[in-house]
Image 1 (cartoon, rainbow, N blue to C red):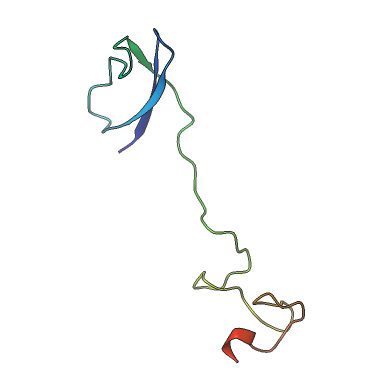
Image 2: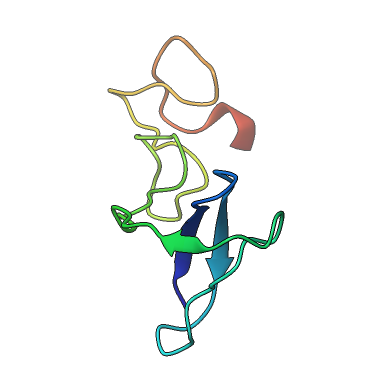
Amino acid sequence: MPTYEYKCSVCGHTFECFHSMTADPVKTCPQCGGKVQRLISGGAGIVVKGSNPGAGAAGDRPACDRTQPCCGRETPCDHRPCES
């Protein structure tokens, strides 16, 4: 279900409402009871979680080999230091 953003034409309050596309739009402001207008939003993009570009297939630890150090080390190794 999408999240819709609304803005009150009376008090200027903006808020979001999570409801199905077939549900009736919100018509009144929850703060002042004034008339609201649904805003056009940019929609959702792809969200990539995590910040480790060198993560292995499991995505939980960085890849480790002779060319790339891992586990906070500055020099490459043959195996992960944390597994030795």
